[in-house]
Length: 322
Image (tube, rainbow, N blue to C red; front, top):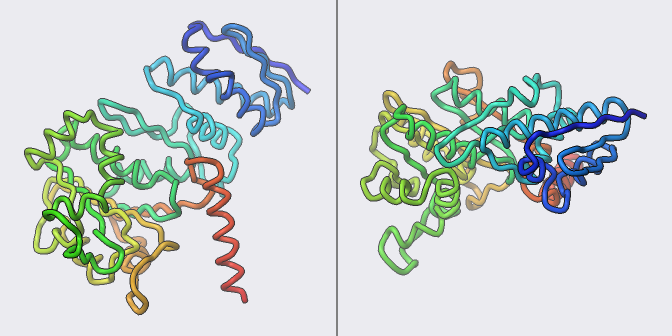
């Protein structure tokens, strides 16, 4: 057994670090098998030498982020614990907690919470087209929107275009009431939510009004060339092969394109093939194309979401074997 005591200079930041009712320390105890006791701006750690070292690395890195003005939530603590303990990491190299990739907008800094998220952000920097593929809750869409918003804010692109199939089975919108915007808005709401989280409402609304920010169903992309833009296609598993080819060939000069989706949640009618797995396979190894395959270990929502994804994956594998 080992003992380690950490002292943090700023009492206010130490309180934020420990969490409300010390909930962040409780998570450390649960995940790293240490005892963590806080008094004022001090915290004492007791456990194995490795566990204490991991817990200290987590707390020191999170405190450093608080000093930079970042907000720390329970999910950030969970992500830092995963990285420090290498939990669920399958031989991927990591730069350490202090070197995790980040995306920074004027409103928020998004830090990778897993090895795959770290690789994803780095691929976004290095490639013109990136596929983020995996289950719900892994941050693939949120990080994509944050990265696109950061490009727009620093002037690297002139426009931000967010798209997704408007409905699961062929974009049939005529039965819905209202004009076209009112018809498609419910299907695009997750993209709006992410955008408003990483940019100020005023900046989003001004951008939409002057068409610097465009949120549109996939059908609206046909025939266009999207130059000097950050372009995101979300829920891409619900694109047919022809829709995927159409979208990918919209990429214009000076643009970045990000395609996200979950091949396990394809909602196309029977007999229609999803264009996402095919595109990922065809473009693997092509220059300037990056791919990140997320797993249940990357889920950063409620811990129960990870267990749900695991259960469905086990069921799918059992079904294939039988």
